[in-house]
Amino acid sequence: MQKEILINVEPQEKRVAVVEGGALEEYYIERPSEVSLVGNIYKGTVNSVMSGIGAAFVDIGVGKNGFLYVTDMMAPIQEFDLLETAAHHPRHTPRPKPSDIDKLVKKGQEVLVQIVKEPIGNKGPRLTTHVGIPGRFVVLMPFDNHMGISKKVTDHTERERLRQILKKIMPNLNMGLIVRTAGVGKSEADFRREIRYLAALWRNIKNRSTKIKAPNLVNEEYSLTFRILRDIFTEDVAGVLVDNREEYKKLMHFANNMMPSMKRKLLFYQEKVSLFDSRGIEKEVEKLYNKKIALKCGGYIFIEETEGLIAIDVNSGSYNKKHMEETAFKVNCEAATEIARQIRMRDIGGIVIIDFIDMLREKHNREIFDILVNMFKKDRAKINILKMSEFGIVQMTRQRIRRGVKKVSYKDCPYCCGRGAVKSAATMAIEVLRSIKKQIEKVRLKEIRSYVHPEVANYMLNEDRSAIAKLEVLYKTRIVIIAEPEMHIENFRVEK
Image (tube, rainbow, N blue to C red; front, side, top):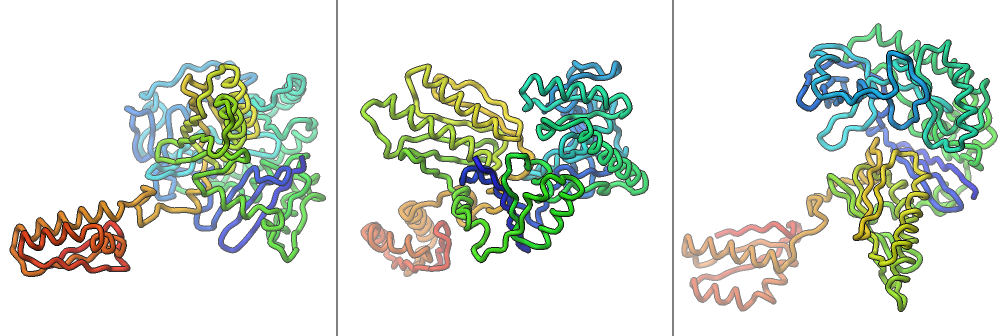
């Protein structure tokens, strides 16, 4: 299927959509006020060392202290298969203990670190001392001596070819090297050319780090559009359309230096119809913020994001056949494909729980699970997925690196305070009458006024009319209900 990369640039934000077969498959957004820090390299100062949890807090000058785990100082990169290591760095290193952090860093020590996860909520950015300089085909690891290939390169013949190329390059490099998926099919000359560029970049980074004082930024990762071209552009991309002339010129210059083969596919879009609208993508983007996603068969999935995990529920909706098993299987099949797509587009990270419709046949459960696993092969994030339980539940984790699409574009509703619901008019009417009763029990009054939201006022003056009348007779007082249009439905005011 034809794949396109659409880049929309406006003063307030940059958006990138990856479209395959006319459908939105990936979506990214970046704003000047919220530029991603992932990949940035800093010279930091250790503020404190917590041996109990095996971590150090490092001041890197971004406001929140970075979090440096002992495992992020000792363990090799997990996303890659390590092929060979030096004798002093054995392939199977023992799992570090939390107390090992005391041997590695001390309070006040300066360290060179790289951000691997954005600050999320109250947590600062997660750091590593395993600095990686990513290129198009390889990642250069200056402080490691590992030689590896991405696990997503599954063809054994290609892996062996790449292994032989690495063996020729590694002896004179004195640094670690990891082949990325984009390196598949590339020649030794392609790798050597890029490694020379990355090695020169590392020399500049090292020189700068010796001249500046901590805490300080040493090297900034590429902005969104440059990262997309470096990490996503492949031979199967038919075209990259950019709707901003200045950005187009910058990307063309980048392509000329880093990716000459892409130049003919990089196009400046200048039609009157906006770029995203011309491909029908704007409506698809808007749907990314909905909790309920309709399926073509009539069923739907419901996505609920919490602080600690994401719950996804599959429902049959209007789709109904005579046999429940057939209904459940059909809906689950379509849902599995859509769930993988939604998780990828929304850039959902953390723990994910998927509740499929119960099916009786074990064969059907296996088929649904296989569909889900195969669809996740398109995802560049690291994913761990467990077998479907007897209750039809799949548990998985997805690597969380940056804030998801929703968190960039939305904030918690100030009206419901992020709950997604507010108290009903009936509930508030009960609370108001309870408060009125407390007031007039303390001090006998001739009249008491209550200012409430219009919906609550309407409910009280109609449904609760008899209850108000009883209170007036019992306490020999007059109760006045006043509607306040600007008042929050959960707020009210009682005055004597």
